Image 1 (cartoon, one colour):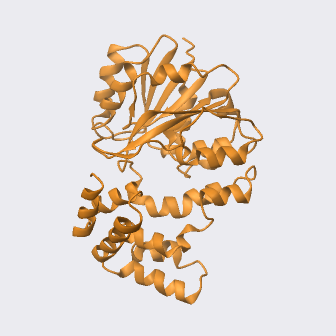
Image 2 (cartoon, helix red, strand yellow):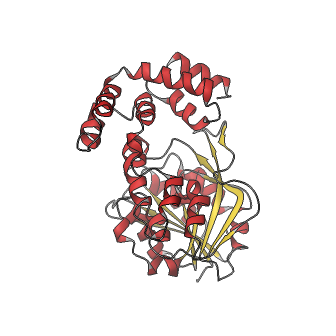
Image 3 (cartoon, rainbow, N blue to C red):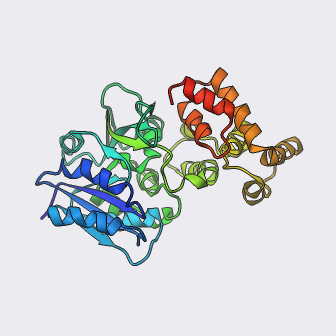
Length: 341
């Protein structure tokens, strides 16, 4: 079998969620598609769950690895086992909307090398919408190989989520992937490491994201303050101006971001000592960075929630994070209710 599209899922210990994800995919498979699940040595009931689908449908394949190699290498392994001309790098706890596979298949004309799928973001229980789309609505634009700046600026919010990527398998295999093991964004490295691929954006949201359920959530400070900006600023194919539109080179220098992470339990003296202590900074910023790391997190949560409630009610994802924090305050709960959570 040589399918047109392989839907590729790399998973680890997601038995509680992956069945719901597979339900939304398997019902959309056609003769020209396959679903491949590569398990990075789960220790829960993932194998039992997925085996029900492989037994019922020959288009579903399951490979269990002897050890986990990290999300980047596991996705690379998944693509290496895929048979399709294109690979949709789908996640293991989010949901495809009805008609999503057919919509993507209609875009794969053999010339396009990358399709970026828009997504909506909902709360972990799918009860409320946090963002109706990660990419602004409008026409479905195309990006030429010399449009790296425009591609990054226009799609970075979606590209921070791997499930939005449908990529030519031959393009993927021709790029350096090993250099991006451990980055947590191997797909972004593959796309921007040199001349970018011919890209089509589907602005209609085709995926529902379960926000706050990622296994890397506890590492949010390290990821968004260091890993993500380090990756973005490593691309020689993108101008400094475009990179600045997506992320400051050192976002951890912004005290309000430190306060937000303190508010949700992501920044403490441990993170200060591990990530910030070695970096040069003005004396007043060093003092304030240390103070923020040790102030009572409940107080920080109340202050951040009050700010969002007055000045940033549109920042629904931040408000949701504050309300779900182990340090959630009375203020955060009131603000969350006021915006519909």
